[in-house]
Length: 350
Image (cartoon, rainbow, N blue to C red; front, side, top):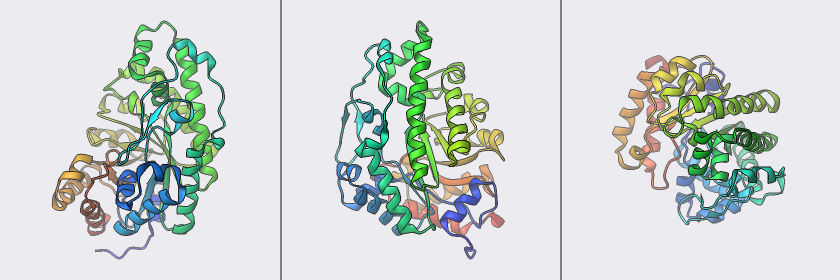
């Protein structure tokens, strides 16, 4: 193994800035796993910043990866806006009802002050604790939950929003909804920056080619991703990532125009194709199969990492991670395998 010359923050920061770190940074998307390992319940961690921070810190200390991703669920903004959410003991909460029964209900949406929301404050306070404890040695990414398109989908319901798009009878209200959701998302990102987190991200799972056409992506999702990327990276001043679930091959050229700092890549995506259109502009973060991280043996995970390195040539602009959020039953030894292969295979020998 090569002697390390950077800590986790420095290593990740270098990769995102297209500088050369001492080795491949590793940041697993394992908030749910960390909570399960901690012995705390999901509900108590989502409402107690000390327990949430302790769960994430303990996992990072145990497995020695380079950064922490704080974002244990994808319902925090939709719940803040009034959707009904069901909490589960060992899994993240899910949205079970939507606030926009009719598209005309968009007219009733009111501005929201997220600073008054207790769950939002839990994430922010947990971020502060993590930053205080790690003292600039570990890179902290705090999610700003859902991007505009996916948040709109949760408020309206996926079937209803898809019908709204296909029917095209009230495009102006759809665009008004997307603009509203984007503003809520950007407000959250600004709050994350204010507590000192090193990067933020959005999940925009619903805008991938598995659900909408590439043309719809360019019309209804990309413009809002571009606005969010510009305001968050340039005006707010924090690195920003976009995650789209599933296979994104059909929108790589368009997605690369979003202006994000980095992309979180699902394992289904052709990462070689995406690397070609983003190299030197947008770093990549991923993209190991989350199921394999639960079921495979460490040697298989290490081989998957080597194969991924061969594809992306990770000398810079790359962070090794999972392709999506890891399940609570992900094997500890498989994350250790990710860290080990990163340390064994420095850039000069890949």
